[in-house]
Amino acid sequence: MTRIGIDLGGTKIEAIALDDDGSVLRRARVATPAGDYDATLAALRDLVADLERSVGAGASIGIGMPGSPSPTTGLVRNANSTWLNGRGFVDDIERMLARPVRVANDADCFALSEAVDGAAAGTRVVFGVILGTGVGGGIAIDGVAWSGRNRIAGEWGHNALPRLAPRDLPPPRCWCGRAGCIEAYLSDPALVAGHRRRGHAAADAAVLAAAATAGDAAARESLALYVDRLARALASVVNVLDPDVIVLGGGLSNIDALYEAVPSSMARSVFADAVTTPIVRNRHGDSSGVRGAAWLWPR
Image (tube, rainbow, N blue to C red; front, side, top):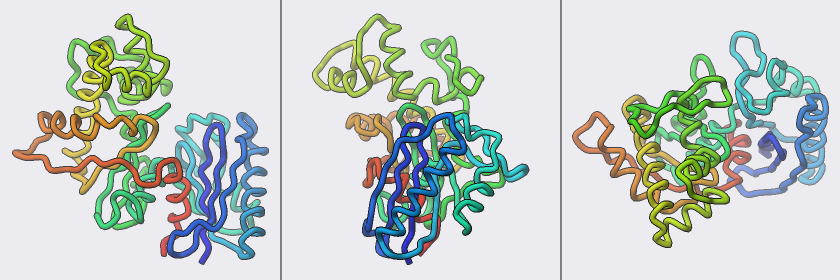
């Protein structure tokens, strides 16, 4: 069985065709027609046609997207690609492709990819974390993406940062309209903005992390604060879900210091006598989301 997975992002749409053992048969990528819903649907249709023509076979279709379709109305909500919100995306794309399509939040697809044949393969309960321009989370259980009753399972980035300390105040505003969201503290732009508010310059999080590794005191202070906040936020996940493994993805997952510093710091906020939850780097990198979309149709 050939599976096509599509990662519908805000700036690009990536598609991949996989065979049953997860080998890549074909990849394709186009720019997202940002702001144009009809053109977005047409781009998805054309990508599917291109991949099926290239592999010479029909395929199942899975799509990872920002936000999620409401189980009540069927309309997309919570997407930062705002032209998708309020639209009957699943019905529209199924009509256009003339077949069933499985759709999930992009962070759920990331978690699924790493659970099936990535860094968390062989474990039962996986929490996948996206740390990048935004902050998201997804859950996979026994190799299946778990979206929950309201299809918001894993939407960790829009919980409030727990155990606020004086240096966390005032809580920053989030794009969702609330203040104090985990995303507003832990995204790449939030890390850099906080560093600048303390009077220091950094082009982006990668530059800041490199400066911290090189011994820059201000950068080390900003990174230590980030580690503390990430540890508090992940401790809340462990207290509720207690996953077998936490997998980090997104640009900030490339900061090596997180994998040693966060677990030891997290233990202070977990309601247990010992915390053994591993925090690991993703295996599939930027391809995790699109691979996970393909695996929405199981083996």
